[in-house]
Image 1 (cartoon, rainbow, N blue to C red):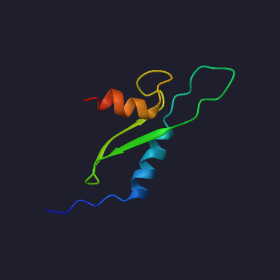
Image 2: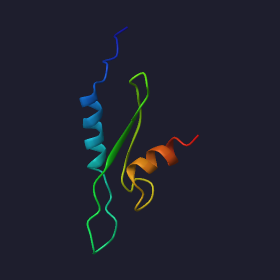
Image 3: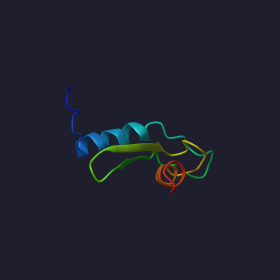
Amino acid sequence: MAKEKELTPRDFMEMAVEAMKKSIPEDREDKTSPKVGAVLVSPDNKLMGTAYRGELRQGDHAEYTLMDRKFRE
């Protein structure tokens, strides 16, 4: 059986950038919504999930979506 490639910090950063590219801007005229991607990594270096701004609801931050909506305990 092939061993899984161990993911590096750079791999996780690249995942965050790819998630960020999916960001959905808020419908506002006064300012531009930032594009944000978030990655959740376990203590043993495993990918737990990703999220991006506006993924589940307009205006929700990527971090909120990931931590409070996808991984709420």
